Amino acid sequence: MIVNDPIADMLAHIRNNLRLKKAQTAYVPTQVTLKILNILFHEGFIRGYKYAHNKKNIFILLKYNNGRSVIRTMKRCSTNSKDIFLTVEELQQTQNPFVLTILSTSKGILSSTEAINCNVGGLLLCKIT
Image 1 (cartoon, rainbow, N blue to C red):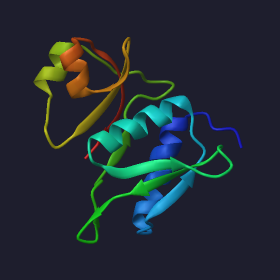
Image 2 (spheres, rainbow, N blue to C red):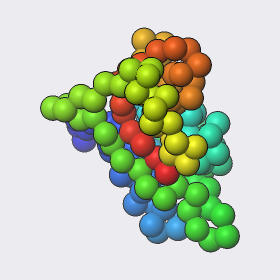
Image 3 (cartoon, rainbow, N blue to C red):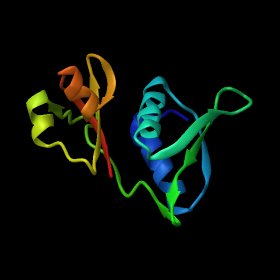
């Protein structure tokens, strides 16, 4: 199956499995989605991820707190037809401790906090609360 937007596909995949209260879910990753999963892990939104025996799939370990998902909403912001770019100043003004903003910058895929620390803006990929 060809996926035009692997980020939106991964977010929908995680969202659907959270609704089903699954502990983990299998997914075929790309380099970009692996970097996003790494940010989600370091920010505490997932328990982690590990490679399956076939080395093509990964298992995303979903995280719950008292039976409720740690992730409330996941939204893909920029699309193929609508790119949203944010400068460092805009990131500083819209910084919210309860929202994880993930950007594609010249330094790679970064959270908004990392982007501010590196003093770079970039393409807004997704927001997670």
